[in-house]
Amino acid sequence: MNRRILAAFLALLLATLACGTELPQTIPTLASSPYDLDRTLYGFFPSPPEISLDSVMETYEALGQHGDVVLLQQNIPWEYFVGGSNGGEAQVIKDIRNQYILAHQQGLEVIFIVDPLNGLDRRQFAGLPDGWEASFANPQVRAAFTNFTLRVLREFEPRYLGLSSEINTYHDTHPEDFPNYLSLYNEVYALIKAEAPETQVFVTFQWDELNNLMPSVARGDPYEVNWDQVEQFEPGLDLWVISSYPYFLFPGGADIPADYYSPLLSRTSKPWPWPRAATPPSRSGRFAARNRTRWTT
Image (cartoon, rainbow, N blue to C red; front, side):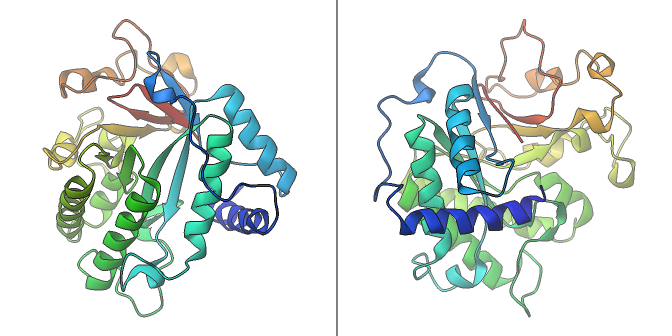
């Protein structure tokens, strides 16, 4: 299902749920956090297979049976947050709260990503109001990005908070604007740490593109990793997080080089998501290099 359509559908369903008695008024407290488990954690992006309330509820029940965390990747409601972090009575905050409720009811933790870009084309912004300049230099974009992030931080207190997804794709296609994003990231990182120093802040990188395996945007030879695109975020990068879609590049799992992901081990001192003796998963997903979390879409 198209993720943008899915997001709109979920918003409608969750708003409907909020009007009934199915969900509690507040987010339930987890009896115990999966983050405290001494093992690899697994998680999923919530993608109901059918357009129905029953399908949403059954999906979260299945996630609770098979996973530990759920990924909420929310585009920014620009017009509601350009003027401040309150955002009026933005429906998106109610929708996020309802998804937190569903997740906690199933014992799931939440990893949250504030996403300014189009999930189907990360060369573009998602949902900018008419007349807004599509640039991270735009004061309206910077204000809404900052205000929405701080609202999420204060309202939901996420332990892991991402500030954009697969940002190197935007870097490769808009190199002239990327310094504006980087300065915005650093500004928001400092604001988050001033309020919640224990919150782990990150941005995700598209690993296959970092390896110059996408000819249209390659900046070097195949398997020559563009480390500069990651390391320019240091020291304000609490986790190294990648996404990878090897099925676009390799005929089968056996064709993926055995050391395809292992270069990360020699580049960062932050723990990698698998034990060093383990074989990294060959299926698509995102991997966080600190808490050994893997989540799939």
